[in-house]
Each structure stands twice: as C-alpha cells, then as structure tokens.
Length: 366
Image 1: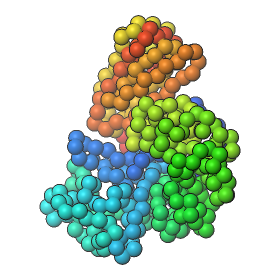
Image 2: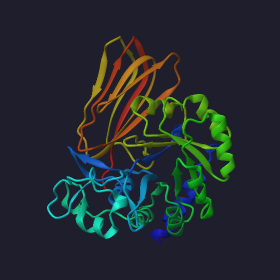
Image 3: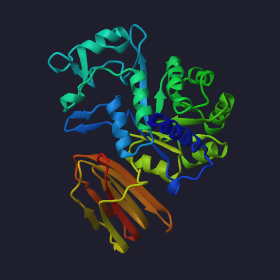
Image 4: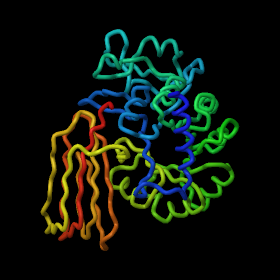
C-alpha cells in the first residue's frame, strides 16, 4: 500500500511540472541538493547522496532530492558526487581519514563497499557507499522524487524499472540525457551551457516531451531568460545559486529550485513560533532581530512586503533587496539543524515595512 501511495505521489508531482500549473504563492518546487544532508559542526550528521538523506528529505517535506550517479571500476552504479570518495568517506577499519585519493572509477564495488564508510557523527550512519538501486528504493519508500544528475544512461533505465516515470533525468550532455526517452516519459532537464534562451528553447523542443533547463550560471538566468523559456512551455531550474541570486531567481519565478538550504515546505505544517510586525518604519541603519529557541530539526520562513532597501540575514546568509513600489512580497526560507534561527532585518536606506512575518517550524519526525 505504501509503495502504491508513493507511485501516485510521483505521478501527481510529475503532472505539476508544467509551467502553466499554479504554484503555491508562485514559489518553485524545492529540490534538496545531494539529498537533505546535515552537518554537525565540521562533520556530516546526514551525509550527501545516501538513503538517510532521502529519509531526512521526507522528514523536512522536500518533494524531491538530487543525486549523482557514477560507475565503479566493475560498472556498478553508485551514488557519489566527487570523482574521489575522500571528502565524504572514511576508512571502515578505524574511521580515520583517507589519506590517498580513492577514485570511484578505479576501484571495484566490493573494495569500496568493504573498506570505506560514509562520514557521520552518528556511528549508526557510518554505512558503505550506497548503490543507485538502494537510493531509488529509498525514494520509493519515503515518497520522494529523485533527480538523477547522471551521464550513466543505464541509471535512467533502472529508475524507470523502480519508479516508472516518477523521476527526473538531468545532465549537461543532450546526447546522453535524451536517451532517457528510450525508457521513460520523465521530466528531462538539460544544462544549456552558455546558450541564449532562443537556442535553449530550440534544443528542448528537439528532445520532446516534458523538458526544462537547469543552470548554475546565475548571471545568465535573468528574468527575461526565465520568462522566455517558461512561455515556450518548459521548466526552469536555478541550480545551487548563492544566497542573494537564489532569492532573485525565486522572485523571477523559476519553476524548480535546487538548493543546499532553501526551504518552504510549509503545507500541512503549523509554525511553533513566530515574529510579526506591521506598518514598521525603519530609518537607515536600524534593524529588528529574532532569535527564538528552536527544535533540533527546524526550518524558518521570512515573508516581507516593503519599500526601500533591506539587508536580510538568516543564519549567516545575506540578502540585499530593494523595492521601489509596494506589493511585491519576498519569501525566504531555510532549513536548520541544531541551530538557533538568527534572523535580522536591517534598513540600508529609510524603509517602510508594510508587513514582516518570520515563522519557525518543527521538522522532527512525525
């Protein structure tokens, strides 16, 4: 029954990808980059690209996660972002750091699986390198859609066998990612490189079916580019933009946001604490702050309608925003782990805040 419900959810999510479909508050669908990883100090608590990150994504309410697929020396598909395992894994024998480079493609699956474990401050999460099959099965179990950042065509076939059309194929190679159509009617996202909007639209049309673009080039993806691609019927993904540009992409209404921290999965959740202000005049240099007590797994959203220039800071990320006319509402959200929300709104010039609302959510296990 749980599997059936997950498949139904996948199909429902896939149906919403059309750019003409309404979005709650015009916000993009949020995708957790490399899974919903969390750091505890300088080490991972939940590592990147692992089934525990899929479970955590479901806990926070993310509808989708991104994962990276690579072949081992003996052609086993595993989940790993880097070419080497050194950054995210440790020696299995004594949990020591790996001194020499260990390249995924130069080691057999048995070697990688036996001699190394994922880094985690929780010993129970120090597990071997995950296979793609294990990651996809976790997505099916927890009702989370995977975005396969993959140049491995076989990964699309396996995803379809496990999830039907309930996955996303994503790569910079059009020749590679187009082969997902051999197995599935899933959404395909193409990194267009430096192509302008017209060329990108032409390439997406040539692939057919549900398609879209994804780019890390925040300077290229401006409002005009986004509108042109959306008007042509395609999705637009902002891919791990830094904080100020990430919010601009949200304001320009990208349809998908791939991020390490962006969060706005409030549906079905009630805030456990909030901070609200109305008709607030902020002279230049004046600020308001909020530092509530917080649950272990938490998230915060800030919604503001203002005129003037504001510097908004949420746990070290800074957003400088200017509104010359009232009525445009900015919504900023972030996930938190073992961290008190540190929210500050400072006037960079004399500003008028029509409304300011900051809400804290408990994203612990239900």
